[in-house]
Length: 319
Length: 235
Image (cartoon, rainbow over all chains, first blue to last red; front, side, top):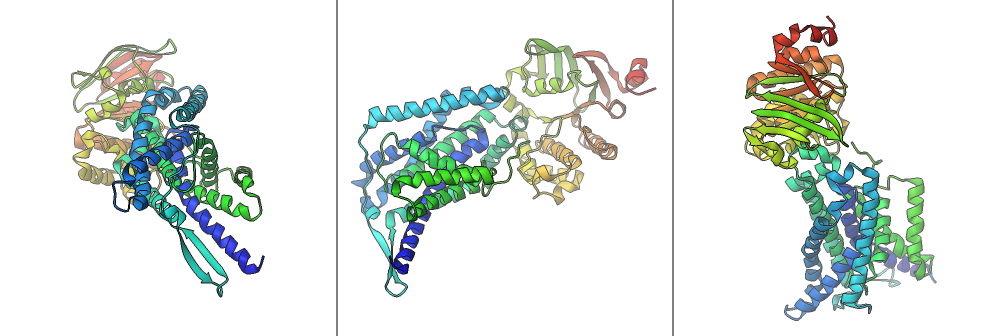
C-alpha cells in the first residue's frame, strides 16, 4: 500500500472509532450512574441494552410507515423512545428485585450484600437473555435505514488520493449520543434531583438526615442507568445486527470503558467509552477483525495494571 | 416538642438503650452527656430512624414519630447534625447547604436561611464553590451545622460537635451554637462528651450511662451534683 492509502485507512478507522465510541460512551455513562450512585455492579446492563435494541426495532417498525421520511427519522425517534420505556422497566426491576439486596438495609451487611447483588444481577441477565430468546427468536435482526448505508464523502484530500466515507446514520447517532450525555450531565450537576442522587451516592445515611428517600433515589438512578444504556443500544441497532445474546458482547465494552475512565465519574465513563471505540476500530490496523475484543481486553488489563484509578478518574474516595 | 418515653433500642438482641425518657420543650436547650458507649449516638439515631426502636415512644409535636419513615422525619422540622460531621465530600459547600434545604420546611425561606448561615459562618460563603471534602475539620463542622440550619428546623440535634476539633475551634463552634439558640429560640438537643461546656450552655441536662438516664435536672442541679463534679468536672 502507498502512504496515502495508509493514511486513508487510518483516517477511516479513526472516524469510525469516534462515531461508535460516542455511542459506547453513552452506554458507559449508564453503567457508571448505577455504580456511582448505588455501588452496585450490574451484570444485567448488557441485557437492558438488548431490550433497548429490540424496543427500538419494533418501535421503528411501528412508526416508519406513518411518518414522512419515516426511514430517515424513525430509527432515531425509536432510539430516544427507548429511554423512558427502559427507565420504567428499570424502576420495576429495582423495586421488585434489586432493592431487596441494596440500599440502607443492604449496606449494613457490606460483604453479604455484595454477593447477593452479584448473583441477583447475573440472574436478571440470564433471565432477560433467555426470555429474549423465547420472545424475539434467535435470528439476528437489524434496523435498516437509508441513512445507515449512505456515506458522506469527504475529499478528495491530499491531491486526489484520499477519500473519506462518513456513514450518515452513525454520525447522527453519535451526535444524539453526545447530546444525551451532555443533557444528563447537566441534570446531575444542576438540578435538585441530580444533587439528591449525588448526595445519596456520597453518604446515604447523611442523605436520610436531609430528608432524601434513599431507596427511591437508588431506584431512579437504576432507571436512569439502564435507560441511558438502552438508548445507546437503540442507536447501535441501526448500524449492526443483533440477537438476544448480544448483551454479553457489549457488557465487556461497557466495563472496559467505565474502568478505563475511572469508576464513578460520568465524564470519565464517556471518555472511556470513546477510547474503547477508538481502540476497537484502530486495532484493525494491526489485528484481524476477530481479535478486536481482544484488543479491548489488553487495553483494559494495561489500565488496571498501570493506572487502577482510570485514565480520567481520581483515586477512589468515599467518606 | 420532643417527648421520648421509655425508649429501648437493641443491636442483635443486646440492649443498647434501656427505657430512656427525655423531653425537649419548645425553645429549650437540652444537653445529653455521658461517657463513650453510653448510647448517646444511638439515641439520636433512633430519633432519626436510622436504628429501629425495640420499644417505647417518640413523639414530636404530639404525633408518633416512630410511625413516620426516616426520610420523612426531616420534613417535619427535625435537623440531625451527625457525629463525625458527615458532609457530602464530593459536593461543593453551597451544594451541601442546598441539600440541607432539601426538606420541605427549608424550601420556602431558602434565600434568608442561606444569608443567615453565611452571616453565622462567613467561611462557608468564602468557600462556597469548594468541595466539602477538602475543608478542614472545623470548617466541615460549621458546614454540617449550617446544613442542619438550612432546613429551617424547629429542633436542631447536634451530635458531638466538638469531636476531633482543637479546643479553640471547639469553643468557637460552641459560641455559634449558643448564638443560634439565643437569636432564633430554636430547640436544641446536644449530645456532648465535653460535659463542662455542655452544662454551661444548656437549660437542662440528662446524664446517660450504659444506656440509662442516671441523672437529670436543670443546669444548676447537675453542676452542683457531687457525682457529676467528681466524674466529669474534675472537682
